[in-house]
Image (cartoon, rainbow, N blue to C red):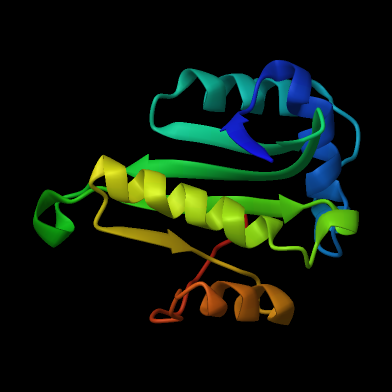
Length: 147
């Protein structure tokens, strides 16, 4: 198992992971189109964003995006925002997600971030339990305005 920054050739596998999910099926597409191409280029060019894949035997089996956010709060500390965590269906339940999250938390700590934050949809009770097992605490109520 190897964790690395995603490259353009990984885009079809990443998009497939995003769409292969109960909620992802309603908001993502399994085919790479211009919107995904633009989004990948923007993430790839931004030094505060990192798209990370887990590779096993040459195949992408998991993904997440981390964004490093500067701020004045917490005495000017940077925070890491984790989004779009997905593990391929046949690899779930084998510790891969935990290893990937541990990897990203370690990178945030090395970078000097004060905290790692994420949101998980309230419909994802399994995901919430997963994050709680890793030490994440539901300390805030997140709010979104869909545009």
